[in-house]
Picture 1 (cartoon, rainbow, N blue to C red):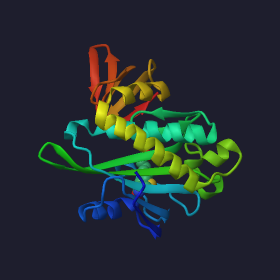
Picture 2: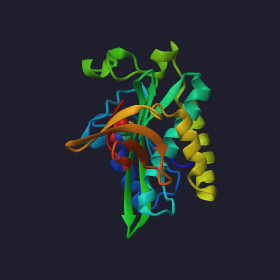
Picture 3: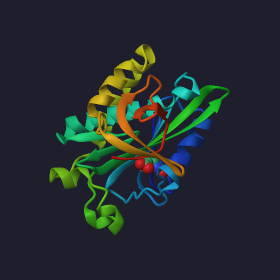
Picture 4: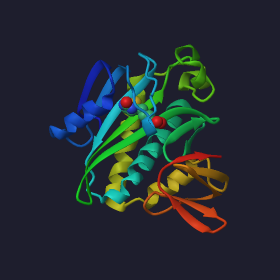
Length: 243
Ligand code: BTN
């Protein structure tokens, strides 16, 4: 992972560029990196603030031979890999909020956007967008972000080398991904549950207009969230959750 890299200083978003590259036949593990995104994309149509020099903005191409309904596992795998790499490199207490936000003391330092193309019921390729606030100071963010976002530098009181962090992330990703292809999701699930913020807590899940309250029990074998509610255990695929 990360052996083939494309870099552009400024892009709208690395996501469509990685999709194009994947369609041209980019090998698994190819990484598209940018210094700045002027139209960075977040989940659920939100925008992702990606100012120059302050973060890691990259899209990773994977080609796992798995059925489409297992694709959520890849996001969880990447969350675990980034958590482990950043913990080792920074010593900060980074935790995962399901499905794919990385937080420090409740504030977001990393988001992951998984987009995939399928063929019949199989994954054709996956583009995982990874955004990490590394050396950002609060002054680069609009007011509304200051309450919910943080960066490694703000939390640690020092700056970090982005190439070193990227190297560490690629190393963890490669190890976990290889393990996943050979041994399946079970080992990742155990790691994920260790780093997750919500296990055993009461949460509210919003799915469109509805919301369901329950206790987060853990992950199902396919990576969905198991929620214990009044009416039994429900399986949650992807949505916003509130603790
Ligand atoms: C989220 O938490 O909403 C996901 C954010 C994902 C941001 C990354 S930055 C690199 C890649 N390119 C984008 O436009 N978005 C992802």
